[in-house]
Image (cartoon, each protein chain N blue to C red):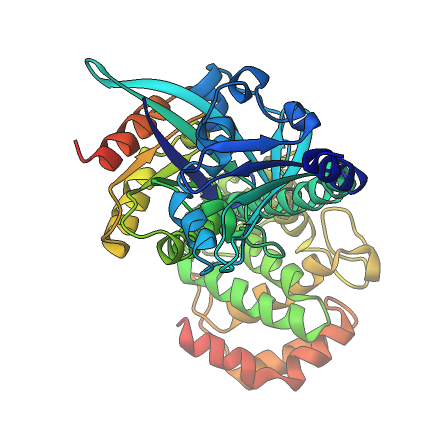
Length: 364
Length: 169
């Protein structure tokens, strides 16, 4: 058997194909099935250079020389995709001279397609998974940026809304106070009266257990309690002497006039103001006007404003009277406890009279 | 004919295979298939009048956290193109690793950096900033280009210029 046939049989058994090169890097032998990996036409050319047959070895002339010289044992290039196959190239020493120097190199081709195919799926899956994680992370970053931007916009919008709301509330408060003052001015009373009534009412509302929002609402709306006076003729409104029965009947209309002016608004504040204007002359025992309501039939805002309005009116000069002393006012309020005024509110008012006199001084 | 071995290295999925396909076949596919081992393509290019060069372009499997590039693929290369993905910062940071590997195995081979997938970035100032940062970090790089295997941007140019750098012309 020819030596090449022996090699062929041996390498075929191990699924190897081979090429043998001499020191000039020219191909001198090859296995039968090497044509699966190399161009057959080129193989027929005598003394053809290995790098022409196997371009994968191009550039490795130096390394192959080192194998010839025994300085390097092997050159291995794993997993080369060659057409439909994956191969591993291995360059190692072939025949040796008697002095042990290397005469030829053998280039082995091992078909590892089956092995690589097994690897391929898991590598692809792993890379796909990693890419997905990267992509998700990028999207998350983008989302976070977007969220931050949105939050900033929302914050700006909320801040603007708050500012506008505050402006609206301030404007409403100012308009109501001005309207209240107009009403009071018509009856020769001062604008400060309505502001004091507002402050007293706020304090008494809190003492009576109303929450801050309700107390604020009352404070803002109460200055308009006498707005209906704009509909009463001057002769009655500014009459220095006692009113006749007819005049008093006319005067009493200011509660309904005020109510009619303010009711029907979409604004909660104006509705509250309507309630106060309507109810602040009602009396606990039912002897008040315009409806003669009794006790808790009278809205709490009306019962509170009734006390604070009278308290402030008695404590200040009017065209028809001088200001009362505090003791006289307290006596009067106690005398009217359960008649004109809600007894519980009167008790709270008298028990905390210092708080009200402080307001009186502050807004004098 | 003069033949030169050029290797493309870089992280996985940076577009090495797509750049080679665009260069060799003028094709691009959105489908991503992992390269296992190495695939070698040949292309003859004209550098100057009467100067044809055969390029053996080695598409080397991308490095991942769990698998490094086999040094045997890098051996004997005459030029190196390191490919990074402009949309994946980690692949840009890893240029350092690829540069260290190629410099260790092959000496004096020119290196070009391809910042690929530039078509996915609408912010050109980011590309400029990245190029400036890389230039200031590595002095031994011949050129840095934004590339797109999809649109073909600078694809021909990087292969032309790596060959010119190899031939020192």
